[in-house]
Amino acid sequence: MKTIAVIVAGVILATTPLSAAELSPQVRATAAAGRLNLEMRKSLIPSIQKNGLTGSMDVCAKEAPAIMAGLEKTFGLTMKRTALRLRNPANSPDVAEKALLEKLAGMQKGEETLPQEVTLFSETESGKERILRYYKPIMMQGPCVGCHGTPDKIPAEVKKVLAARYPKDKAMGYKEGDLRGIISITVKEKIPEGEFKK
Image 1: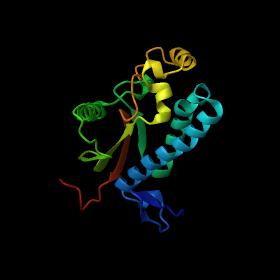
Image 2: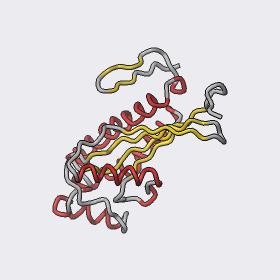
Image 3: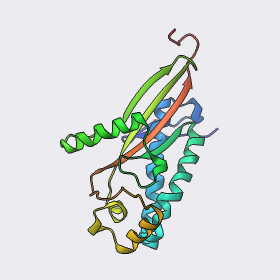
Image 4: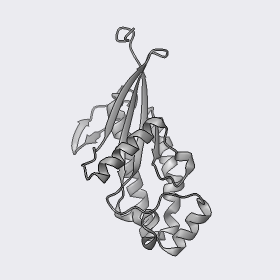
């Protein structure tokens, strides 16, 4: 059994030996999103420094899905990255994700402060499950501008690779600080018989 330390806003929430299944859905989702951000930074920034932008594009395209698959297994959840303007059509938002993305985009356009995270719960009678939908906004960071920025910020060699890999790419035209998309996490848990609302 592993010791899991979950840190939210700099506070350690759990340091006792726990399996991921023993953590609450909210803690599991928060921890998985935090780990994804951490692992992506650990992979992407050194790769850009060593290999340049074109040599680092597989970090987002291939390493990120592998990292997410590992986190899904560790924390017992499903996760994806999605946006309104997609690079990879396989990451298209579902109805709930699209509605949230549109709301967040509207908030940013109105210069409102975006939430750090959004959590929604629902219960399904058929499966007697409680479903947590957890979303974390993905904000444009400096290193991301080289592949997702305005055309004048994207080097010609990067544009060439993007055009070849993603002929229908719409994930450009962003500037640092813009909403790029969301991390979307779903956690399902069985509702104990005594708690289920009939």
